Length: 461
Image 1 (cartoon, rainbow, N blue to C red):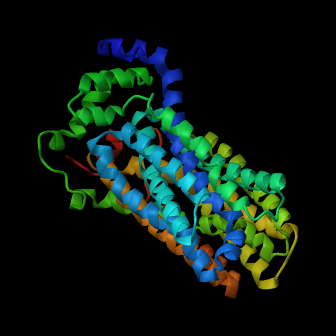
Image 2 (spheres, rainbow, N blue to C red):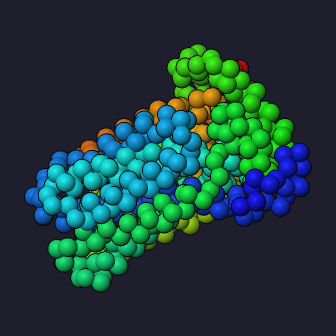
């Protein structure tokens, strides 16, 4: 690697030479954590009917089985911050890859329901950790003018992971026959392949320059910034050092204090609405929703792929818009189309409608999430949180997000069995509230350095 031979004083030239390869490779590798996050999230949707039969699960126990991974995500999200600060972002990504790998094999070979719960929980720990560390790493290495689209690659990989999980489930059912009793094991086991690739790739990327400055390794940080194409590595390293001054001089930065309250509340607000937009109720139970609407098992898996493809297309559109229109505009427009889509979904359940209208309703919800909340959430959370508390703050905010996700995923099949219209009606009301709060309180963050955003939010170290 030529990274260690870059002269920090010639950052502009080095940056122009290194912009393409290393930045894109590092972003892509980090985003593999997000890919596995998406794959693990969606793969369960193809196994729910088999799990009901194999383990004799009621609606409540099925909801718990699905949410067992989400209990793990809360542990992973809350526990990822300190290791990422102690050891660095890169080693933690490698550890998460190992957990994904163990979870894939464990779920595939689960010998009873309790074993399945344990390995789903372990995979959830990896998902929770990846939801914190992957976008955090990308946020910290990306130049300000490209940060939105680069962090959105993490969301793109989540979406690709979801789509490939749907495709993988469909392929397994097609290969072995939709009634094969071992299909669900293969569906879980497929995740071992990308997990192994993530583990190998995580060992080749550089460390975050902001973590290096935090560890008094400024020269290395300048070299990494230059390699990633930042226009003024020395100047930016100085800004990072200034923003971290209190922590670097030994003053402990408590997370919960007045100066951090505003960014924490704003990041927490976005995280809460990310779950109350109903996306995970749809993602986890896509095939079940289609079966409720009258589709057979094979058709339900095929229609799930259509929803996953919608997710991918709308995410790609969002990536072209996020650094042009900004984060706030996407959230506001998304709130409106969410209300329309949830209203249609509520009508579907209330009238027991079948056919294309069911697909349109779910495509509306998933597509809206993809171009608004899904594209914005990981960008904004890490932009709003100051350098000194980004790891610990992101851990707390993601813990809150996954806590809500677990609640939604556990309760949705129970509530939907009684009144699906009420469930989607609730999500619609939450999106009205999101529109009001985002319009009134959320600042636009596009095009500003992380240190400049920190100053604008009134955080002085």
